[in-house]
Image (cartoon, rainbow, N blue to C red):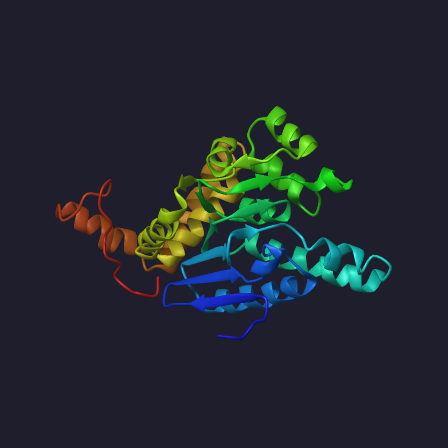
Length: 274
């Protein structure tokens, strides 16, 4: 694993964790951190893990962008400004399309761009005690860089999404789940254990089927029903080819022998590499 200054990367056999490590700045994202995230995601993807967890050091998940380093210091240097912003777009786009299941473990403050990162992840486990805000209007701009898009994508009701964007009012981790930003919330003392249990569950599944489940979910959102059926069947045949029909040869064969219950149990993969 590579050494980084602003993040910590921990890659295990089937999972990885990236911890944003600027606790004195509430893990606010600087241009240097953005550049490191670009490299880290490439490294983690190459490891072919099944799950990637993103979290923050100290009492924060991500306190948004480092306003001084990202904006103020580079505003009069267009080339440097473009480079810093470019790195942020690059790694966040990579995160959105990441083949492994991505889990935001929101352990503390989650503001602005931190909400964007959380919104790009597939699953978000949130500590009840966390504080959230779309704080951009407090310093004279709107939620940008993809944050407005993430707000619309994650908050199902327009009047709530626009209300919090306009007011910058804070809300709790429990409210974040109710508003659509999270999957589940837990007391902070239980967050690590609950996330570990989730990772254990996901890593027991097939890597390729996890990837395909994400892909089919994303691609069919804007399709009509007949097109979605065609696409899903085509991807099913592709998955079957890539896994040597493991779901038929192993899973359904085991079911036919009444060795396990698909609705309650998980079958043992025929090969570790699928």
